[in-house]
Image 1 (cartoon, rainbow, N blue to C red):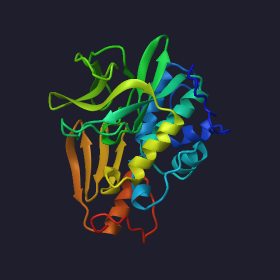
Image 2 (image 1 turned 90 degrees about the vertical axis):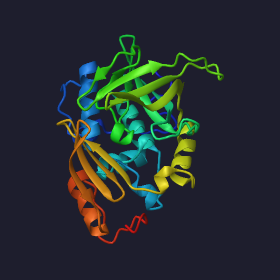
Image 3 (image 1 turned 45 degrees about the vertical axis):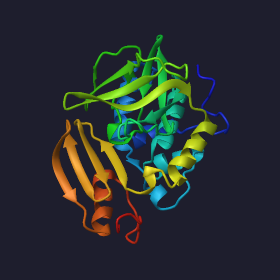
Length: 286
């Protein structure tokens, strides 16, 4: 088992029943720590709790205490980004008896080849019968919707797309092995993030959370980013003034957002995110 228990650094136990209701869980009722349960949990979470950075834009502190995350994502029907999503998911998995641990990564999908982004992504690894599985419910529009085996480079089909986990063949000057979580887009494998298998402890998450939410260089501070998968294989995304509904990568609906009231309506109707009518996010006039 991981040495980071559900109550590490704080005596708080997650309300699993409330969480399951929040994600509309419909998997095995006994909640046995099996792969089948994992699959239902990941798809349900990714389809119910949006990835979003709205509190960053509103100047609110991102609280990574489990009480704070549970109140926001479970009790208040909000979303969040990787530190919130995957911390919550990790605590739930551990509470259900899984051998789960949080790992760190560098999101490199949109980075130029000569730029090394900060290691500010949190995702989870679950070990079942000696097999490591990647569980990630917090990487925006690239959130995988089923567990991914980490011990094979073979392509893996998910309800939404095709993924693989490959190990770099190039020697690394840092002495660590490096893996890449990749997605197949238009017959091309694109790396979503890179990782070494290093555990991301709570203090590391706090540091990464500060950078992501407060650094002037953080992309989370200059655009609206929202994403939500759907059980039918489609995805909803919103990038500041553009809402898109895609299925298997192909747009089936696009809306150009012209005003803040229109934005607030889309947040409500498409993502279940409700804000007061006078809310201003301070990005591109919205």
